[in-house]
Length: 228
Image 1 (cartoon, rainbow, N blue to C red):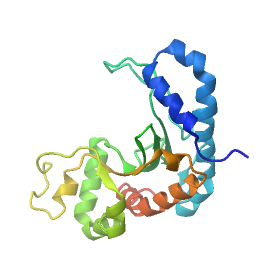
Image 2 (image 1 turned 120 degrees about the vertical axis):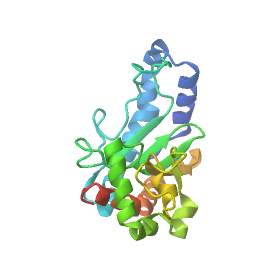
Image 3 (image 1 turned 90 degrees about the vertical axis):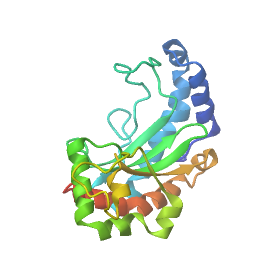
């Protein structure tokens, strides 16, 4: 059975890809990507199925090569000035069962040399979704505080993404949670070092993070009328 973790060869490949980000090089080294990045990542995703089901029966760890939790290595360059064809990182989204149809919070794992992290929440939602979450925070401030202000949570996680300089239109600038209402997204991250990604304990570590961030994801699901 494949050990559900990575090896240093995964990081060696991604560093090399950053230096040689072109289609010819990737074609010549695709077997390295499959062996050291994609297959180990699919094994990690498969190993998270049972732990994730214990946290929420509505979340999925989908280990399919295409169309599952793993992001494609190819970049979408249609609207970018950077035409580099490949991502120099790999990531997986552990998604809500309705996540294909509506915006929904998710759990996330990111692998990048020197920049690995685990995350949870909703990254830069569309304006209608953002407003629903803001309104829900205004209406349910205590539950938001419980989900995001527990000392153990604050020690482990930082909110990611940008915030508005001023209070969003229609919200009280003096609201006690105005700092949260200014956010353009509601996701948290915690760093992982490369050695943790290469440890056979990686699935247990991820399960611990997913369990710790579940109150935030649960709250966001409630805001969007999604089951958790």
